[in-house]
Structure formats: structure tokens, C-alpha cells
Amino acid sequence: MMALATESPLLRISALTKRFGGFTALDNVSVDIRPGERFGLIGPNGSGKTTLINCISGAFRTEAGTVVFRDEDITRLQPHMRTRRGIARSFQIPRPFRSMTVAENLMVALDFAAATDEIASAAQRRDTMMSILTRMGLASKADVSATKLSQVELRKMELARAMATHPKLLISDEAMAGLSSSEVDEVLDLLMSLAGQNITIIMIEHIMQAVMRFSDRVMCLDAGKIIAIGTPNEVMANQRVQEAYLGT
Amino acid sequence: MKRNDIYFSIGAALFLAGALLMTQVIGNQYPFFACYVILQFIVLAVAWSILGGYAGYVNFGTSAFFGMGVYTAVFLFKAFGAPLAVQIAAAAAVGALMGFALGFLTLRMQGIYFSIATIALTIIIETTITNWRFVGGASGIQMQRPPVTAPFDSYVQMLFFVQALLVVLAVGIARYIQNSWIGRGLQALKDDELAAECTGVPTLRLKLLACVVSGALMCAAGAPAAMYLQYADPASAFNLNYSVSALAMSLIGGTAHWAGPIIGAILLGSTQQLLTVTISSEVNVLVLGVMLVLFVVAAPEGIIGLIRRVRGNRSEGKT
Image (cartoon, rainbow over all chains, first blue to last red; front, side, top):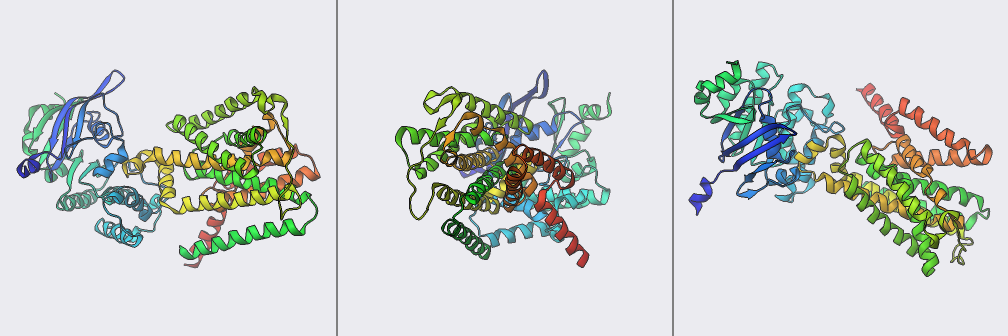
């Protein structure tokens, strides 16, 4: 039994299809994400990467297929239920709670998502919050309004807020887009250190060096279909991937 | 935090003691008539801001809830001769149910669509009451006040004190919500619903809760109005003026803090009373509109926002 439990995937996506009117954004996508994996998701613009994330996190309802997380079918669950079960995400365009400080942004997560795991006192939660901010390099910004952050700080705060929900699976949707190369390294190091703490990470990214450095496994989507999946080198060498990126 | 709770309780107790003292000392009935209206608007504005301010869902249906409160009282009084306390409690229950139904049907709509749906609710309910003979129909209904209970000398004084109790209840609830996890969740979903969902906030459930609490308080505030006027008719009970006033008072006072709607309601309510007496009751509607426009342009965060800005500037000046 134990052997079975460790072998079962953390997230199993089976035959997932998502349509917007007549447009098929995801077409029969199936993939297993293993526990502890660093999973890179690539593909040209409009290939369905963010749609897939939205289907996993519950922002979209799907037409067909199932999403199974830790052996539980979560296909019909609302986003907040999935967050409480351990799926956290960041957004391609950061979506902070603008009327709040950085600390308050994290407290929302601690109040609502982490509460089921541990009934902690206010002081304990504040400690947890500060330790996450410290790890993310945002401790000095705790009492700053979320609207006053720079782009890289916003990205980090999104990751920090996601971390505050105690995720088992963290989905980072282009957390490095629009950052300078040194900032990209900073965020990549952060994601690496999170992966080291037994958190499975799905990373969507356009910056190839980052994907190559980060991922155990890479999947490439094109027009809603999986065109390649494997080690970073295998996928990069794949002819269809090259065609999708460079055009034929 | 704890110390603030004590200060708040002392403040509430002093307020009630003051109100009670007023009824024992002042013989003239007019101050009670005027203050009753102001207190009633405090309850409405505070209740409105629980959904409209904290959650950012602009409700134009205040008059639907208020009128429903009036007619719950009318019905119970006519059918069973129910005492005032029962009328108010029942109105609160009706308001909660109505809030739940409204919320369940409409809270999936966002922004302006929700507001339009609440206006529709007002019209539907008003039309229903207008066609219900038992409670007077379109021509309204006269109400005979029962004898007043001690220690009050007149029924209006008693209603004044009852409304003061409702103020304390409404403010206490609004303050609790603002400072609790509920308030934090509502604030998060006001900022960004999807981000809130993905941070674990059960947005629909929290919005429903806000709608239920807000509806219950609005209905409760309306219940004593029938006895106050000794008369009820659909056109005045469901008057759009209640919706506009509650909204304007909350926005002018500021919705970021529970004290905002109180400040707004006292400011606008007393201005209205003053204008009604000195000039005419029509002018006060004009003044309401002008003040709302001025505030939207000059101080979109209301008086609370102005105070915070001034304080912020000062503390920045120090460092």
C-alpha cells in the first residue's frame, strides 16, 4: 500500500478540454505531475498554458476531463476549496489586494487558506507571515502598501502570498516576465529554494534559460495540445517544439 | 485590540444612557421626532456599508429592505397585535431571508449588474405590497399606537430609544465584521475576487453573509417606522430616497472604517432635518445630491479618507 501511495501522482490531469465558444483552448490534455517535481510548462502565446493553470486552480470550469489532486477529484471544486487543499498560484499580471499592505496581503492567505491545517494564534500567524516575507526578501516591505511595490517586489509578494496558503503544489505563471536578468535570477533562486522544501512547482515561463535551469521535466503546448513532454533537453531538441517556436 | 473593545463598549453604554436621559429630561417632542430619523439613517448607512463598503457591492435596494421592515411590522401588528420587539425581530428575520435570496440570485453578478438587480427587487416588492389589500394596498394603512410602556412618557420617545438600541447593535456588528477575518475576506474580494478565491477566500459565502447581515439590519431599522408615522403606504415605505440616502451617507462618511457611515449619516441627516424645518423638504434632496457630487470629486474616500490623508501628511512631515 505504501509503495502505491508514494507512486501515485500529486496531480493527474485526464483528457481535459476547455472551449471558449467555438475556440478549443485545451484539447484532450492529459498529464501527471509527480510529487516534488519541478515541472516547466512552455508554449507559444495563446497555446493554452494559462488556460491550463486556470483549469487546475478552478478559475475556469472545464467542458470535459478530470483534475485529480492527491487522489481526490477536484474538477468541480471552487477555487478557494482547491487552495485549501494545497494548490496555490501566482498570476501572470500580478493581482495584489491593493487596499492592503504587504503583510495584510499575506494575512488573508493565513486567515483563510492555512486555517484548516493549523489553528494558530494571531501572534503565531504573524511569525509565520514574517518568516515567509523574510525568506522572500520582503521583510522590510511588510507595512508598505501593495500599490507602492516595484514590479519584482510585486512578483515576490504574489509568490509569498501563495506560500502563505501552505501549498503542496505551487503554480507560477510567468513570475519572471518583464524582469531584468538579475531579477530573473533572484526569482528563480527563490523558486528553487521553495522546491527544495518539498513543494511541487509548475512553472510557466517564456525565458528559456530559466526553464532549462529549473525544470526536471518540461511540457510544451501548442494550440491546446501537448506536442512534447520530457527532460528539458529532449523537449528543446524536439522538432515540433522548434517549429512551434520559430515557425516552419 | 482588547482595550479598544472596552472603549467601544463604554462609548456605546454612554450613548444609550444619554439617549435614555434625554427621554426623561426633555419634554418637547420635536427633538425625538428629528433624532429618530437621524438614528434610523445611521442604522441604514451602517448596514449599507457592510455590503456596499466592505465588499464593494453597491446595493440600491435599501428601500426594498426598509419597506419590507415597515410592512412586516404592519402585518404582524394588524394580524396578531404583535408588540414592537416582536415586530423588529421578525423584520430582522425577514430581512435576513430576503438578503439571502437576493444574494443567492444576484451576487454572481458583479459591479453595475448587481446594482441594477437590487433596483428591480425594490420595484417587485413595492408592486406586490401595493396590490396586497390586507396591509392597505396603494392607499396605505392607519396604525393605532398601543399604550406606551414605562419609563417612557410618549411612544415617540420610546421609538427613539429603540432606534438608539438598533444603532448600537448595527455599529457593534459592523465594527466586529471590519476587525474580524470576515472583514479581511470582504476587503480582499473587493480588491480582486479571483485573487481572493485563489488565496482561499470563499467569496460567494462571504458576500452572502454580508448581504444577509446588511439586509437584516435594514429591515429591522424599518420596522418601527410604521408606529413612528402611525401610517404606512407603499410609495413612502419603498421610497428610493432611502436607497440614495444610505448610499450617499456611507460614501460621504467613508466606507473604509465603521465610523464613516455614522459620520455621514449624522452630517447629512441633521442637515436634512435642519433644511426641512427652515426651508423645505424638497431642498434637502437637492442638498444631498450636491454634497454627493462634491465629495465624489473632492474626497472620493469620504470624510474618513480625508482624515487619514491629513494624518498621513502630518506624520510624513515629521519624519
